[in-house]
Image (cartoon, rainbow, N blue to C red; front, side, top):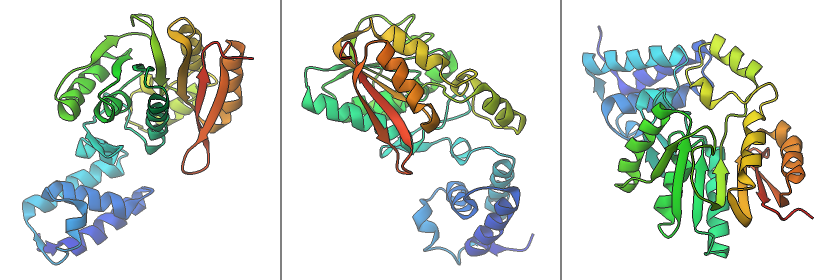
Length: 285
């Protein structure tokens, strides 16, 4: 193999990923090459003329091949930033999305305004990005978490050590069925994709676990169940905070209203889409 430098490797990698249909080919190439070299992405641009060894080139090419086949960059790097924290991720869990940071922001606002609301449960926790971020940023609140997937909770355990250097109470549970106690705030980023959408994604090779994606025929099966379960698991006027897709927001607010939730608030993500629904238990008027 002829020797190549970082600039050329990035150009070739970006072109290769572009042909494969990647949405952000140059960024992906930068992240994968920085991972190969064990440096931060920003450092690449100060070293564009540096040569790549044959070993590094082969490792980089292997990552590019996997990315072109549809494996998320976060799975290849085994990490994803969320709220400024570095989480371990692999195919046992959903990759954390920036939109989910809205849930963390909402909880921090509530607990700042109502410091007595100090018991928080994260249902469908996955990697633990919500629960562990809250516990890290607000040590004064008591945070627990649950997930139906034992494999997901293994990843949660890895991140507990990385982010907190301690463990939180966790439960293997279908929503709240095996979760004890009552809470001031229950949060969830539940599976809310339509089953038909997940079928198409998996047929195309999407690697994230189906159990973390599939919300039933209309995507709201788990939202309905969790909202109903939470009425008896929240303190009076406690908060339920849910992430859903924009087209599901009217149905979600209707579900909460029918169950007696009130003071319902909808928050938008950075793209202007309705993303998070907040309701207060027993506050429906």
